[in-house]
Length: 421
Ligand code: BES
Ligand code: ZN
Ligand code: ZN
Figure 1: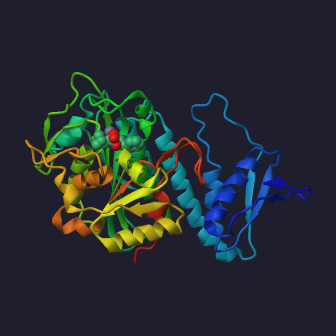
Figure 2 (figure 1 turned 45 degrees about the vertical axis):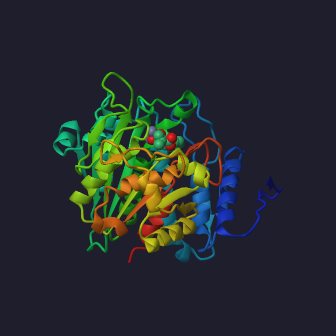
């Protein structure tokens, strides 16, 4: 990449497709931000506007909240030029909304656990609801107890912060084409609990709320795109800590559904929160689709690598359509298949089910199968589980992702929701 004397930035590109254009615009914006230029202009057409906007907004993203001297840039204006403005305009506006929702998700994930804990998460959801005309309902521990969500409550018991269930609703002006429930794992910190993580594995566990932050980003995008669908967001915001009051391996928890769970590892806490939130979501809303997003297992990274989201569920056609949306929006996703043999590994000698598998293989799938146990029969084909453990966060930049949160799944699901008939 180099500048010519005519103020032109020249950037090598492997292939002239949208994936390469996104990466190239993202490298270009970084270079321009550290140059002396005040204004730049990108030439776009209808086919590549989305990729270039994503490259610029996502590639240029920096999180400076905790830097005493944020990096300065002289770059003030970024223009897009096109031979056919009217054709590019709506694509541009949609791409900006989705890219900004992705940055919104990144900002919350990147926020440290002292600033972003279950109560402050609830405040943030309330603020978004107010700004975007959403309904917002928050359940504190008293209400959670009344709802018999003892599994979720157990995980948060040793925290000094009160656990919160957050329910946001977006209703369109016109008749809704479909109703969608989006459920997010919101572990504002995962120390592992009494099955404490080793030092190096605990670093970065502020990102265990990424699923929850993604579903917030999605409902933000949907409400700004004004899509004709009804969207419900359910977040289980909890902190998994240690202390005299901590839940422990050997406990048996009675979940909201009545199914009992043997705790064999307090670090497999995400599923203990999600099983109650999924049950609550299905009880409260009869959705056409229900998707959950969670940084659920390290095993998902072992299976697919750190860049790819793992997609699990029963409906092949639904999995196929979200994978199509993933590639259309420039995200990496792949399916991990359920099978009845792995399901048997969750048997418990004392309760209905164990919170971990008895074998060390296929951990992303056995976690998905644990959640499956809490999906109502009539919802089996409507549900998908997205494991974003690898894709949600990175310490080494790749594609249009810099250091920290990536906002994984916001673009993929926004695209899926935009295409609902
Ligand atoms: N939050 C972690 C999963 C995770 C690991 C996310 C690394 C991102 C990066 C989750 O709660 C967890 O600790 N899972 C355990 C499950 C095990 C105890 C069955 C894991 O993956 O080791
Ligand atoms: Zn854990
Ligand atoms: Zn976790």
